[in-house]
Length: 140
Length: 123
Image (tube, rainbow over all chains, first blue to last red; front, top):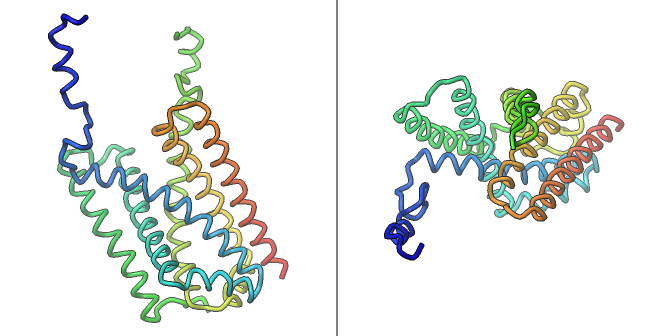
């Protein structure tokens, strides 16, 4: 075993996928972001549960929810969750397209990644800009 | 250790075949229209008082759609989190602990949401 000339060399070879050696392609970025946004949305479901409970608790309950979420940090969290939903939605549709056999080529998956990043960012910013400029609240 | 019976059942090493994969896809497809409806609702209720939200969720269809969104989204979340745990946690004890934690958490969150919706409907 000690005489095997390949052992030392084999240890030095990078293993695939070696995160610290490869330059990250955009497809790798969207792949791990899909997972990260999924985890963020799971946490978001707990905020949704709290929101529904606060509504059922009447004015004081609703106030206590807004006292936390209507702060800069709370709004940042909501913006993050909004973008996470937009991203996970768009990239999820991309996953469903793959399941049907579409968009597997290297170029299509690269372009799809870029589109998903761009569209999800536009959706999240548009929602916040729309609500801020008074276009939300139409279910009053 | 692959026995002929195992091959006939076709369930493989996961013991559940493609069941997890398929459920993840079915819930994802259901969440496409439900998420769009959910966004329409939260944007529509943004900046309003609790009275608007109470009136909105007191309507049966809105309560049913919200309950469907919550249940299916939590189911999808549990399936997705299970994959994350499977991929990154390699000790049996921590894995079982996190599986149970995720399952108890989604059941707790789901029951809480449905109770809140029932409470709104009763007001």
